[in-house]
Image (cartoon, rainbow, N blue to C red; front, side, top):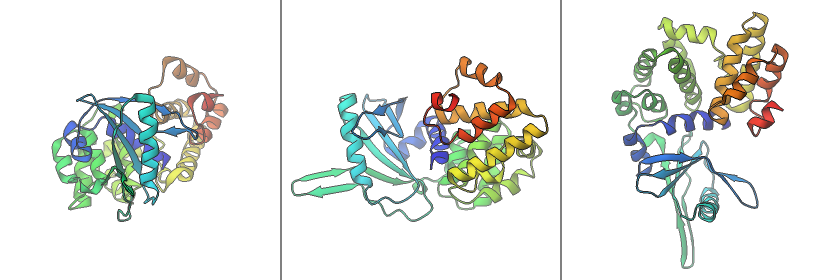
Length: 286
């Protein structure tokens, strides 16, 4: 789920206000990066401050969890202790199976409830028609009348972006497509667009990263880096590692960028193997 978390958070933070309001019932003015203090370390997936000054807490879930409501209650209490406010809470379900989780707890005169939303409630075709590339990318998880036609439209939109955004948007699309087993369809359609075909050939976006969760991602990244280093494309691999660090840990500072750019090929390879295991940027670079 870590791979999907990274891509989903990246897209959701840039999602249009209309789409986010349909999912959560409110618009977010800014997002906080908060690690919640508790007996066990709790890190909220997404905690934002709403336009009205309240808090919105989103947890991303790719599998049904019968204990989800109690987990959300723990988050609510921890957020209240640290932020002084109780948040509006939404469990955003992005899994393939039918949604079966409850967001309610009841006992005697006490009750707790949070919203549990299946992202397939969103009209994916409407998101694609909206024009924003972020809305287009997340539409791959929403409800689509014709998946192949929708993917073709999404790829055309991505192809119109500038080089840097085009690469990152395609990377996000391929990552999220793993939640819907749509990778092969995207690959087939992208091959019909030379500008995207070039990305597939020269970026570390091999199918191993998309087949599933962390092990597949790590194997694909390792394989791609090894091949790139053997072919002398060290600079390209550095760029890939910097992009993945940005998706995993947030914006890359000039100091970290300079440090990565100075590393020799063997050290780059070791870092690539630790990208999924490291708990922080400091841990990754130690």
